[in-house]
Length: 105
Picture (cartoon, rainbow, N blue to C red):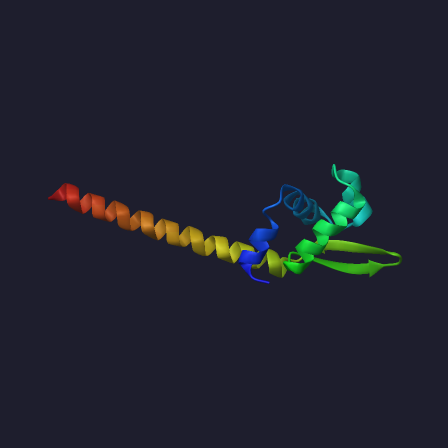
């Protein structure tokens, strides 16, 4: 999945909250549902979207699945945002340089 797909997945507030919880510690669906104002089936649906976006991974532990933040997916989003930030700073620097040169005339 691309960084854009991951950002689309993070467009939902509940999914962002799930990612925040998983950043703190791996959790089962039930553990997440206990900490969120949504049902267990809703948490499962959100986790499917996050998994498809490569933001979380899951491992079977007995009869339950434990989800954790996928560092590679989080890094892809961070790289994308870093590139956007660098582009914005470069544009701002060019704007300031152009404004300064106009004032010097």
